[in-house]
Image (cartoon, rainbow, N blue to C red; front, side, top):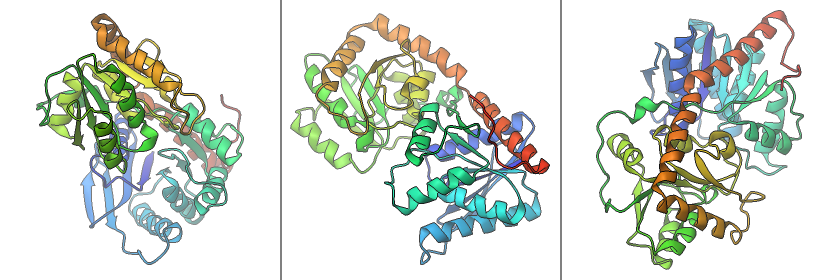
Length: 390
């Protein structure tokens, strides 16, 4: 089977979609399937995928055409060119624009597609993206969200029944990424290190984490906020208002040796989302590194971690719940983790075991089963999957 990925964000380095596509290509090769990828980039280029496939990245020159019209046509054209060279059996569309392209491609060539939204739908009813999502979840041959929670949330938001073509499949994690040279980022002070690796934006809840840590100034610790994003300035200002300027290090995006060092040397991983967490790749990585975790129960988090690998604080209804009841529980969880080496060891050990269960091979086996079934149904003329599944 030849699976073609269409990714809207593969060109971004580092990035979750890029890591996922490359890992899935490698895992598909391990079970005997070929893969290719179509994406955009600032300039035309191609690169090898693990397993021998090719990522074909093309400069998007249709900037005067509205995104909702231009990009799907652009991706569909590139899929057609790839199909002429090497026939495609199934498309995995990573995002809504990619899925709109896959729908156009199916109309032309009859190739089925799996819609794989890479996050959660944040567009309100009545907007074109919400309307497009409602169309695509009906039209796709199968819908695979990044978790069971995300699948339920998508179906609820789009008023679509949780039928047999909808699945939730967690991303995988590769512990070998933690191997190799390691070097500390500038500014590490050597205090008990709390790592938060995530994009800096309000749904990730770094502001709640900072407020809880402000109640723990009697303990030694340093928080590393590794990542960047639209909330960086607000978080920096909050850090100063809370009097934590000497305890919080903003590293920006970390890669390679710095990334490995932080996962290897942190004593605690803390990520406290207050919105639908579709998967939580950093939580997967933290478990693979054997880090004890303090987090919330937002979205898929309880699917990724367990009560034996993390201290999980309930946040109540999301998005953006009331912070008042969260802070005492979060303060308590952080204090327990920071003051008990035995607890940290137990949580981290269980996390490593959990990470071994969440491999990319396990993830891709699920995608492969879905893709094989939609191909079988397409070739038999049955159409999209609508059989009971759960």
